[in-house]
Length: 232
Image 1 (cartoon, rainbow, N blue to C red):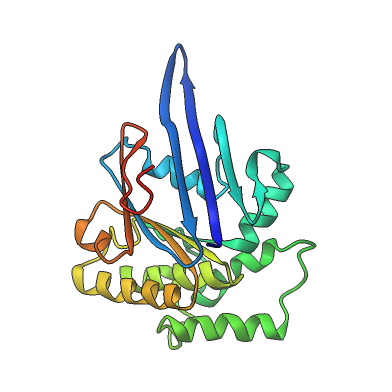
Image 2 (tube, one colour):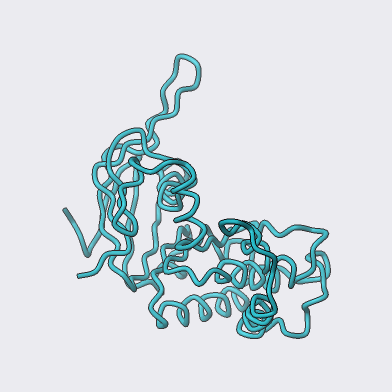
């Protein structure tokens, strides 16, 4: 079984003055390539902390996280940034679009952080336009975020997440700000990406959305309370 990622006995502590918050307490799981995982749990359960570590946005206090055959704890910040930019696409609940940029410019953003920062080529531009077509925004390329609906902004965020052709998509409440009809459209896009072979790891508090995943991990008090595929 090929793995997109592996976490082993992860702990994450935050020190707030004299108080220590134990956000993760011994979390272990495997993420096979092509899996579609929903991570659920109440506020403070550790699901967002786990997603940040999986995305290389944070590091565990102790424990092992292996991605692309490399233990994150052994990587320099530069090496981790390179893996994050190449292998992982992020989709956020709040979209995180740049207000003054057009749809096309927002999609292009990750390309500006490639190693050596080469100028955008004609092929880059064509690829970004193709991604806009794939998410149904071919006629919105010159629009800015304030001119788009919430669903359209999330489609821009998905296209931006795909621009470096990542193997893993991390989605933090991707339908949290959307109505049920638009949520269904966004989930259809995620299912298509999963069928193409991408690994999807999604945090959600919505059971109806989580049921669309192949696997659901339930977190409580910084630990995995239930993982039906890998019960440990």
